[in-house]
Image (cartoon, rainbow over all chains, first blue to last red):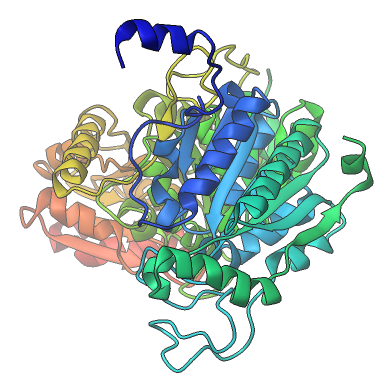
Length: 258
Length: 354
């Protein structure tokens, strides 16, 4: 295409897709087919659209997303394993005008950090939690998580998991001080659009000071599930959705009025 | 501001907020609970943050979060609770964040008891968590000193961007005595340059302690070591009694040091040339001054409310140059001055005793 033609074409073009300002340009370390990238982009888009980038602080977990604080163009810090909600509490209490977000995997949030997430939710801390549930420990190489499905084989449950997974959204939704707790999935464009909408709502809940908000995102881990990326997305539909139904588990009255 | 009758725990709490503490996070544990209770009333009165955490683990991580925002913040606990905080302490230290932790030490190991002890000397001076670092550790011997060292703790923490632990035995926390509180300081209007306040009109700031490459982690470790070298050079603090002409020396800190002073005074009245060296900083250990004194004395008695923990630092400082003896009580037992007098008498040569 010669330059004149390019100029003539761009004159009639509008931007329909670009890098969100809140997302950094640095390549991530995530495996091919992993949905962390999708979750990162949704959060960045939501921060841009709500004009929150300059007020946002991300508390990263220990797990595959341990470097999350480097991937966003916002202030960030890195919590000890499971302690992100406690760190976020400290930040939010001294700086209520900040938008404080924790980004946590299932081992971080539901296992070692079960106490911190429970009490942060029970206090109704006005922070926003993005909970990435892929039913396995990713960074350490595929061990059993508290959200691992019954019978699911992992490197630490080689004969299949005994017992049943923790359903964190359902558990936390019963606490009176929680404002917004929903589960969404990242395996199809339609589900991803709904996930984006939920993240927008959760951040608005925080801005309005309505209380604790959490969006659980069913995610894939092709590497540790031993599947191709496409098979992994299919596995979310066939295996995870029956155990972890998407839906709204807590939408406080004030949230409905937003 | 006159002197008033104050309980140690309350005095530390009040001194901390007057020194500009904006946020306190804690968890009840005897014998430090009055500290938390005092702040539960006072911090909201001043429009500041008080939060009772669900555990010591959560409390120290809340402190970590508040420290990321660049405000003066503190937690307090007692020995088993400090053990639970080790993870957070290490992360805070590895993020170059200032904060103050108060340890009102009790008897151990295990659940132990709620009586006074100095059994945390190793725990607080030898790293307080995994990795190569030391907090600055201050040891008060009276309520007044606890007040003064609390203010100093915040100033040192900010100056060096370093973790500071106020290590007081349960006697200091529980005892009431007259003390003068510091004036109320104005809060700073600006946050420090590392504070996570939102990337408005500036590049994002990040606080983390994660270095995947050995070279990067080692380079960071060398930074910590350089800072610790500066701290060792500038911050060794100690107090001396009757050392000018002393030929024998007692070394003790906190309540043990204070009780030892009574013993030293008793022997001085009998004409025995004995002096007291009381470390204020347990880290950095005041080795320069102790080494100088070691050159003039014939023997040293270390007194602690533990099985001999600072004893190791005394040995490291003066090696084999002078005979070093030890007298310790454990498990919440507090030595009487007479016990220290007889321990001293055992190490004194016959010609001094007669």
